[in-house]
Length: 319
Image (tube, rainbow, N blue to C red; front, side, top):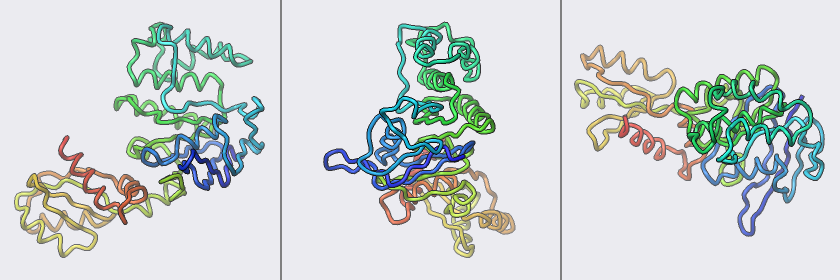
């Protein structure tokens, strides 16, 4: 079953076209990443899917039903949050969920303990939300969404503020929900945080979809990744790179090398360094191929190369 089918969505705010002719399809059990830089139109698109703003044109179907924001039943089986999930800070996490459960019919209240446990807050439900970290509030937002036992989960930047352990736990939870048949849309501007979670991706830039497809298709089309390289003879390493197709190196201002290499091109180059007696002292991934694809698709330069190198330099400076 198709959980979401949006066609030709357009939304303008005065002179700004925030969403410009967007099509989006999410199938049952699919995890789709909605990616793009800040201002790409992702949040406006989510607001339209929630019925918080009306499109100027285009159509939305949820589970095969024409979406009518005026009909509360149109959002049956749908849950999630847009931007930062909000709660009463002077109440506990448990009390906030109890209030939300009262807004829904059925047995949402009986699921509170289970959803707190599922998002890793089983021992913190009795604490006031004012004492929660940003990551804990994100987890509570996901718990609130799960109270509805949703068939469609719409999450805006759900990994914001999470530490590495929280990222792994959230990824595992998303995959579990997907295996149970829940369709999930993850909006993010950090592909590195969601690339291992999603089955497919939709990239937006300036309100338009610039790429849409499966994770496998994305990996197949992704450009070279970027690596930090340090050797016993950097001058020789630079010279050797000229003879290896798919390998490009620049000598950074900090005296270290940044190398970009297409899939399958890096290993032969590293082997060649060893044969020439050049020791590889450091080879560290800075920008994955999917991150490079993100910048190629969403940057204002022709191919995103400048942004890829800029990100590589920024990442290297903080390692």
